[in-house]
Length: 368
Image (cartoon, rainbow, N blue to C red; front, side, top):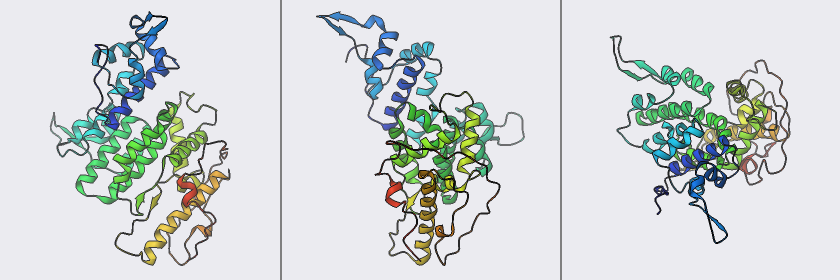
């Protein structure tokens, strides 16, 4: 290895993704179309001509593939040209994902590394005395909603820390609620990874570390990459209808719009279609009538939601066919529904091998 190279990444998916994310962000900030152009701009002295060929270290090509980690001096140098890039590489989220299974993980200490606004939301004084240390506040749905409205990696890191805490305490309901919030936030922050062509790696990492390990009542988490990318694309297009939904400085307003869509305020089709989809795991034997009805009800509402989305039809409230005959389901009252324009899908935006088409049969042919 030459003196210009950096150390090999030990192929930890977290390290690979964070370096590729950092490199793609630098390319975007410098308006370069390739890693070669970045290297030529930042380190022109490393290029030379030899026997009619251009010779260069190709260090940034290895960064783009996630094969090497940049040294501290390199990161500082790049930060001068692309402000904010160092934070992307060294964001606490990456370290949290790497140490999340360690018993010694101190939640408040990790929360202290996040944005001060996030800290104010999740940390509280241990007692009323002056200089009291701050501790992690108990999780509540209200706190979770506050974090969702931020729509950034700091909020995602905080939700994951709460998820880890719930897992330690064996609070299955809280862990499932947090898993649902994390999935919704992944749909929101995933746009940045989608634009950097890292959506598959991004979703795979969080599915493996968080979503597959969440105790869903329905069964096992079953959303595949194609379904996730389609959901992300549709959600962002509905929140911002321009060709490039990223070209707007009003990110918080878009986040609020996306959360309204996901909560059913503009129609329950999006609420059901973009909730975590699970497959039953009846390891103890054949399911009871209630077991089957609970999952089939979940599947029907999900399938109805996707049927509306893929046909470009706004579904305000699920029809009677979405209910399993003879099984009681707590119907939600249809509140005031806002209008919205249905998305238009074309090309490969929705791949036919996606779980949408495997389990999204609508109308249902199964009867109770």
